Length: 327
Length: 119
Image 1 (cartoon, rainbow over the protein chains, first blue to last red):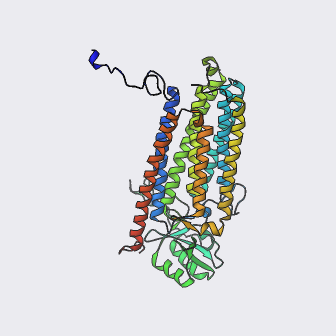
Image 2 (cartoon, each protein chain N blue to C red):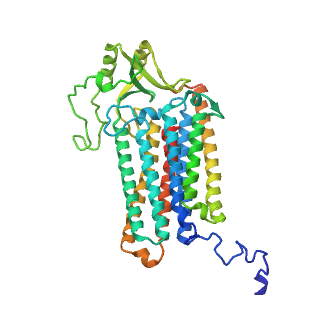
Image 3 (tube, rainbow over the protein chains, first blue to last red):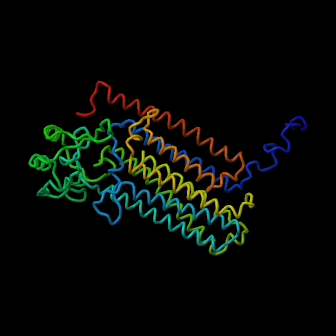
């Protein structure tokens, strides 16, 4: 069988000559890097798709500062960015405690690993709670809007250009019936939920109050939403208004393009799912550290591997933060 | 496995240093995002406003620090580093380029085409 053996390759003893570990990383760590690379590509795919849709509707995309402007216990105060900046800090800080845990693991200091991992789990949990709160505000909506026949969104402002709550100037519709659900009456037929507000009421209330104007989705050359004149406002409402939209879901969105809500739910949701998995993994490893598994094993490499995942989640958030809230 | 364990004293210091850098960059981003200086918002450079360029560059700088310092990429072998980083950089650049160009094209069709999308 001498003929099949390669006599010399000229790489013997070198990094890629065989018989050694050229990447100098354990199997587990290497596989974590494989996973992180592929997951990074998944997130890039989502964010690039978000970019695609945004470029497609570049002149009518919602302005993030107007959408995410809530802060806990500061109701009605316009606080763009502050809350999400706080969330970002929490996540970065949990990354710091994680890397401190990994570092303590290298030194085989069990108690320090326990403390830092507990802090990391706490940070992750706070972040998840914050995200849930952010979702709640987004789904609930604030000012309400009217959807037109072509699926555009009309919002309301007063003559000073300040946003006006649709629910404040429109009377609650008098309903003589409730929403028909599939479980009642004729089986398996249902209708869309009846809104508390009727689009006809919006029109008449709008006409009665000369202080109101319509704001469209279109961005002007200064990147601000276009406000129509009083006549144009009445005209566009009369001709195109179709129904009232309160808050956001997967098909309608009071802030503007429904795609914006879809991507928001999908990308922050997928990221939140990663954070949740990360917290669960951290809890498992945390208990393993407590019972001394890695002390017996003589290496805290498992903490390092879950740490890699945790930093990756932070890394993704840095990008989500930029592309959803800043750019 | 346990890579070079010689950087112990400096490791903690490095962590806090990187935390400082990341915090500073985030604060700069948030402050710029709140103030939105006129000059940066309305000056365009290669299809993007200067402000957006700043945001994107700062984000990449933050990504660098997270990967290199927190994920210990700076202590990994060059082979592993290149395997992860170049794969990502090339595929992601391609993906972004093709999708953004196509998105821009569809926007052109919507705005300049013969069919109105707002009826």
